[in-house]
Image (cartoon, rainbow, N blue to C red; front, side):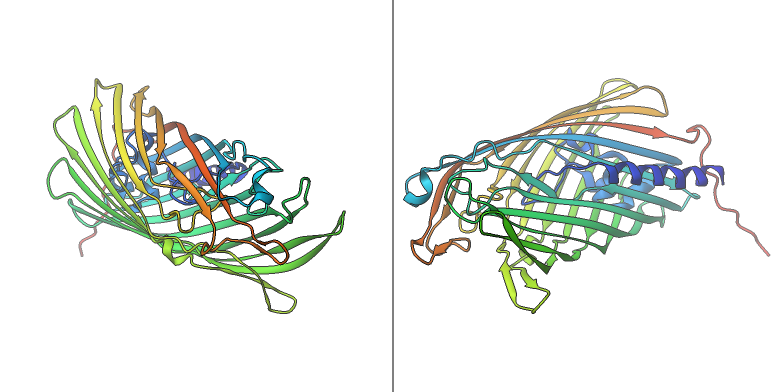
Length: 441
């Protein structure tokens, strides 16, 4: 009972600490994959099979049955993006002289944490807290694409309590509830002229989803995992602020329904010998369900704006390996390829995403049998990226006097990611959780 009370306290502390943190990063549209320092060093290969430590609960809640006793894990990830949009020939002459965006990438700290508690030899309780979605971009205030975007911010926070059950020696099942808060703020200039004021769309909501998972151990040293995170329907409630004249603004209460994507993650973890372990992972994200959310004026029910997404589905594949040098040190590396849901047909100045290659390294140091420190580093190489907002593009703005205002640009981008983490076991590893009492009558 003492351990269980401590579990509840640690869960509360974990949640409070992460709610206090802010920031966001984009990985495949505006998803955040950076949930584990251990997994970061593997490019998240095999995360659904437990290779990302206790924070594997994010991909597959059944992985907590691999963690005996009472354990916690915390990670803090620094995402350092750099992206510049340079207008080129094809851009409207009314826009091109305003110049490039400057660096639109905003550095961010992404926290995540998990707690697991083993009740008996079959049943586990767990809690994940973190940010599954988010990004921030901020170009120069005056630039060639300011009528298409200025500041953009998406923030989310999830708390996901889970229950996992070990059916037998080779099968574990789990389920959990996602409680998600989301806040969105988008700004664009009302004119291409220098110093033009910004219109702002913002809203927030708290909604719910679920998560499911299973792990299979067909042979000793082999772990296979599959996890599912459901779509969450966010009913964003907020305001559309429209500048009027030099200083005044009209504020319209609005709402918009955004269906966030569900995700399926599959992982494999295979022990080659007592030193080497190899991992592989595959992930599908149903970004195509976003489509075109309508922003509705709550005063009269009319459509005030349309948010054009129309993404394709996203895919992510990774492989990695770990080497246990001695009881204290473990080293790891991984590579991945990510197929972005955003292509040239729909790419915008707000989120100029593209396919990318991940290259990662990492290490863990076990201070003792209870405390372990982790570090991971990733460099992301993006493919050559262009933006072509022209005839037929969903974002093209047509001025009633000047006509279409196309924007064509080159994007130069890269991302560095540094993650640090700590894992701690609160009970005594030498004293396993007792089996449940069975009474015979």
